[in-house]
Length: 450
Image (tube, rainbow, N blue to C red; front, side, top):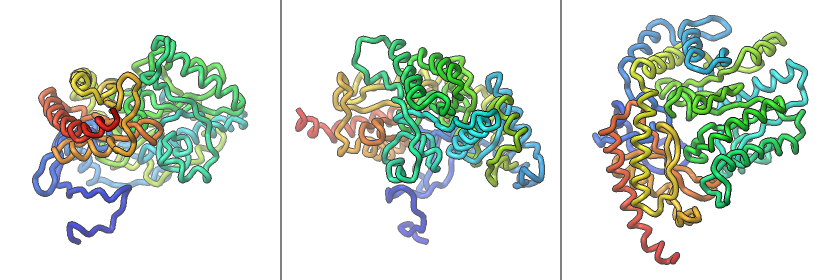
């Protein structure tokens, strides 16, 4: 096969070089060009690339067995990883079910919730409320819960259409309310939607505690989280946190939920949980949900690679790296440094309308007018153009459309948790250069708008 011929297809035809190797926060293509992985791939490579201790533990498991079907054998890696995961999560979350990725985790969480309702005599509960915008995966169940139009709309006729409430995008609001009052106002939208849908039909509320690809590290006011928990409890609705992106230490806590002292009923994990070393994800729930399901005939759900011993050996090694090298604490410290530097860029570039996030789950949003937060014209495709400029410079960042996938441009800056302050300076130098080049490109377009 030549460099120009490929039998693969993905989302686009954007050409990319062949990857040669990875080391820490860096990736190298076959020409020797170095790239800083400032987005950890798709917010996956939490402990950096090619960690020798993780690879050694994977090799040790490979020498024993790479596959053992969960209905035929227990395995030490899966049992040990489950125990370690429970030890790192808040009290009340003490049962683990393994999957291979984020979409599978969300599907599993929703199916567990539904089967628990059936097992406890609440069979009318089947509606899962989620937010708009949001992203929860590309499989059909997860996609129906996703609020991102370009991904969902082509398949909408094939789905039931689960109810949505507005995501708490308070940074766009122009009213007289305080942030805490806004948080309560957005939370009350959930109560209104439950009443509208019929309280005895609502099964769960699914949300990202800190926004991912669809909202760019969106953080709600503190009041939002407490009120959401209260509303769910009042109506007997299960609270599911999609921590596929925010979990496994990225925000400076093992789960983002810990920032607010909230314990969800079910948590979906993936991405940084396996950190790119093997396809791995999980749901974590309490025995009060799991035991009735098992008593009623078992969890009617599963995947071939659920609990795969090689993947679980990798996941256990990843969690040990987080603990042994204080990487969660480093995410909190370096996140403050990186966020301050992004805010300094915002002070220099009027097209940056917002900087947000926690720990090393951070983003900035480009706008045409910072006062009104009017987005850049969508046909400028800023979300794609800035990524390409940065990539040419050797900086990998991650972008999406902010306003439901239709318009708006945000960029996730989420380097591996092993990042150092000098490496943050490397990122900022390249990002500054990329922004300067993009601002120069669109200067004439701004003049036409004036």
